[in-house]
Length: 167
Image (cartoon, rainbow, N blue to C red):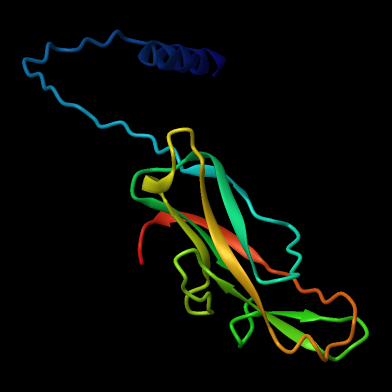
């Protein structure tokens, strides 16, 4: 029995022995090309005042630096927390008085919930050194003569978006 088993195993090894493979010459050839692309996304540094002190209605600036923006794209600064009066509420910690602060974009349009853009800086308005700027107006709505003395505060939240230009 051992001899038969040994002969079967030897036969199996001989049958499984590696063989050389030969490829035939291919008489056909083809040429082509592939497009290789890589997108470099637009970038910039935005400077927005962190504190806006309102003594009188004033104009404030948004500055762009280190801008690398694709042609046809726009940097947009959008206010994200306007209330139903299209304003930011300023409150006093010890009073029920509330003032609304409204914003005006550089082109003179009022910033609203439906048009919340404080600034729009197009790629064509960015200088060769990568800088640009936009201004915005701030005005206080309410009767400050009867208000309780002190500091009224509110927070403007914003989002910076870079995308294709649109009106």
